[in-house]
Length: 92
Image (cartoon, rainbow, N blue to C red; front, top):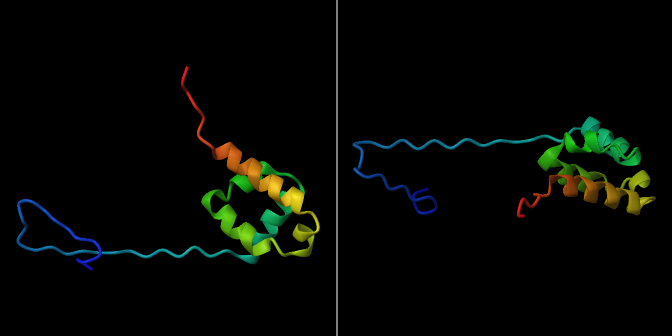
């Protein structure tokens, strides 16, 4: 572990305990169905609820018949969600 994530503390403590936590996110069939319906209905609010997981869910449903039958809608919905998360410029 120390080779991958070196830890240097000054002054050196008498003892160091390192703890690492793993996290697993599950994508349920209901989540996939919800995203599919949101794309079909152009419901950007529903899509935005999935935040950083939307791409992962979308990749799992892209080959569903309803999604592959209308790739333009699929693509435009994901593009619209991405645009809504893009940073805006405040330069004047």
